[in-house]
Amino acid sequence: MTAGDAALVLTAAAAWYMAGLIWFVQRTHYPMMRWGPQDRFADFEQEHMQRTGPVTGPPMLVELASAAWLVAAIPQGVPAWTAWLSLALAVAVFAHTLAVFVPLHRKLGHGKDEAALRKLVAHNWLRTTLWSARALLLAGMILARLAV
Image (tube, rainbow, N blue to C red):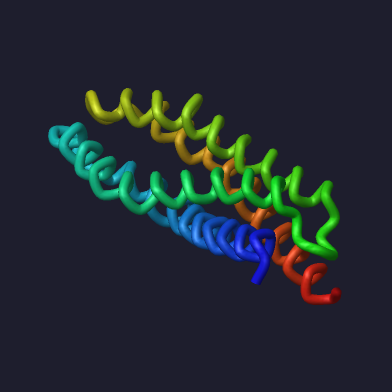
């Protein structure tokens, strides 16, 4: 296995993991947050962050690093533009998470806020779309690599 093949497998695995996770979060977890108790919502949000961080943060970092590695070691048969697009999508998701979701979760950490909860669900559709597109793109890249 070449370095490019390893980068492709690693970034695809991270992207597919995150795509599956984000669909669960989008369709189940974030919408259910509105049912969190008003009087203990800050505790609820803190628990959410403590439990969610370890299952999202490390895979996102692996995804970002492996996407950069893939650009540096593009496997034979994989069009270079797809590796660059994969990296751009990973950067976009990471930046959107830092710019939108970190502040929203900080706000929710102070107590229940219906407007912030609605924004959480609405803005998460962009991440859901980007991660899904990235997972599909990487599936295509694997097929291109296998066709060589």
